[in-house]
Image (cartoon, rainbow, N blue to C red; front, top):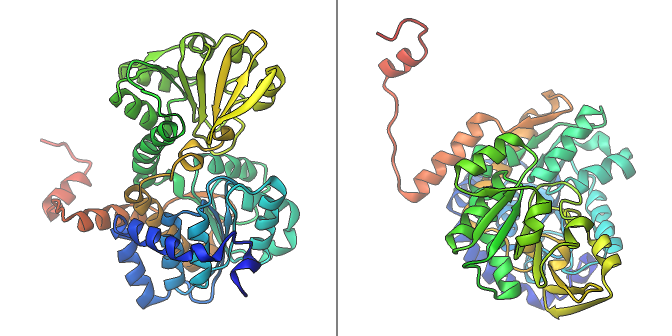
Length: 420
C-alpha cells in the first residue's frame, strides 16, 4: 500500500518525521535497550497489535521497538489534535500502517479506529480506552482473537475498571498508567512541564503573579501545580477528595471550591478525568480575559456547550485560542478547543519521561503475549518485576549505581522476630 491508503496527510513529510523520531530517541535510552533485546529475542513474532495512541515522535520509538520484537503493528490516533503528521508519514514509510491526521473530525477519528480494529488485533494498546470500548461495543466478533491489552492513561483505566466491574470487559488489561515508573514521572514531571509549555505556546502570557487554578490534585495536577509555582504563579487547588485537598494544603497551596476560585483565577487548568469540572456557574463569575485549558484526556472537563450557549460572539484570536465574548462584554479564552493542551498546543511530554512509560508498554505487551491466556478478564497492575526492571534500566542508562542488600539484611527484613 502507499501512504495515501492510510489517510496520511502528506507522505513527503516523512524525512522530517524521521529527524524528529531520531531526536526523541536520544532521550529514550531505556526503550533503546529494550529494542536491542527485542531484536534478538523476537518476543512478539507474528503477533497482531493495534494501538490507539498519540502519534508523536516518542510513540514512533515505541512502534519501532514493537516492530523490532516481531509485532505486526497498526496505529491510529487517540486524539484528533495530537497527531504529528510528519511522524505518521515516517512510520508508514517504515512499514507501519498509521491511520491519523492532525485535526481530523469525529467521523474520521472513529473511521480510523475501525481501520485499526480491522487488523484483527491479538494485543490492543490504548490511550483513553476508545479502541477497547469501540471493540467491545461495535466489533464484538473480533474479541475472540484478543489475548490482552494495555492502557496508558488515568482516564482510560477508570473506564476499563468500570467495564470490569460491570462484567463487560472481555480480556485482561494491564494498567500501564499505574506503574510507579509511569505516574511518578510521566504524570507528574511530563504533564507538569508539557502543560505549561502548551499554555505558553498558545498565549505567550506571563505566569508570574497570576492566579493559576488547578482542578484536581492527582499526579498530573501535582505536576502542573509544581511547575506553575516554579514560574511564579499563585497556585490555587480545587478538589473533591479530602485527603488530596489536605495534601495540597500541606504542600503550601491555597485550596478552595471552584465556585470561589472562579472569581479570582486568571488561568484555569483541569486534569481530573471527570465531566463539567468548570461549568456555567463558574463562567458567570470569571474575570474578563480568563484563560481556560484542559490537560485531561477528553474535552469534557470544561463545559464547552454551556460556554458556547452563553457567548454572543466567538472568534479564533490566536492559532490555539478561541475567545468567547459574553453578553456583558467579558471575554473568556479557551485553549486548544478544550482538548489536551500539552499535545494540541505543544508537543506533549518530554521524551525522557515517555522513555519509561513506553518501556513499561513494551515489556507489558511481551508479558501479555506470554501470560495473557492465563489471566482473568480484569484490569491488572503492572507486574512489580517489570516496574523495577524499567527503573533499573533507567539508572543504568544514566550511569547511576545503587546499593544492594546483603544476605544478612534480606534475612533480617523477612524475619518476624524482635528487632533487638
